[in-house]
Image (cartoon, rainbow, N blue to C red):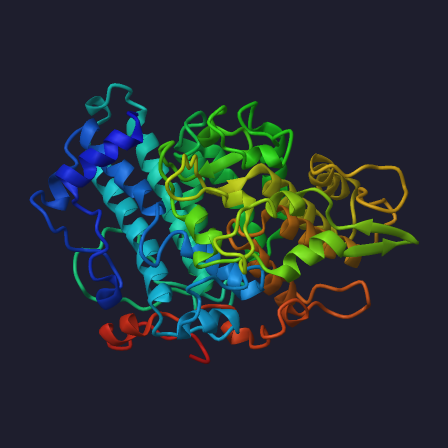
Length: 501
């Protein structure tokens, strides 16, 4: 595939068939191509199929109210983001106090953006399926393109489900509206159940695992990414046995191109000396040219997001005592993150997104990386047996050792010992994900939700509550965002609003 930089120029200048966010707030879907080529016939050969595929991936670049907001908003709900220079409006205050606003522009923009991604994937699938394998230089490329699109359609539906649906309750009617074909009219459809949503996501991922390329640039979907996302989806679904099996498969059988980076810092030091878009740890990340950003750096420099003092304090001073040994939560990652230059003196920087406007940006965003797979495995392996198995403990400690933890049995930044209890272990996994992944894809908040809903035992003998971490996170109904009011009204009530909104 050509360099995506030039592909996108072709997409936006000539095709634009399904690459606009047409009226989603009004009609729930992107359905009406605006320019000269009819969507049904725009994909006519390998070149146009590749161009449209590139346009699908472009949905993951910075958009108004879309990306990177759906990485920032969950961290606001969890308290990792304490707000930025412009986080003073009604909607922003709603996120900060765990009382989201159904009329908010960001809530609407994220919803729109994700359905845009899904609908572009649908056009790719439908158009490419009509072609013959003989239309491609490599006959296998037809099935690869379709598989890549299915991986991204699954990604979009999963992001929607965990943000707007009761992903934690398989018996809930509050899933999301599944779009499995291109939207060609304005007719609203009711929400699918949570179980139906998971089924559709997992079916797409199975196809992607079977047919997506295994070796490709990390800013394209691969079979390894699809398998890793499957492990994550299964964890959210509560199928811990299968989540552990799939995660372990990713850890052990993905080849030399997928592994942990030697250092945590190396993931984010994009100085141009390495191929930052294809780092070995990434399963999938967002594309950008060397001299442009994708929004995260600007946003996390204090404009819309500022890493909270409470998060930094937990990493620097938080401890767990196990049979008399005092183990520090972190010693290296928090100091590294704090190197970021703040936008103003009153806002904390974040060196994960240290880039600033007017400089070489070298920016990307990791949607899924190998460290998270290790931590998914650690949690799922423990939960499936209600115990701390040696493999689960090793997966957790592998991430700590990568961050610099030692194994001496003394106090400090140490690996966790085999004497750790099951409740302590689950809390250790949650904290480790917080230290490792904070501000990346919102896991800090979704873990709070999952741990509360599953009645995760705590070391003190109780059950975990999200409000233990974020005092205002008390209303379970508002663990998820509202469907934008504009969509509810335009759809004449066909789509049910979430409870308490």
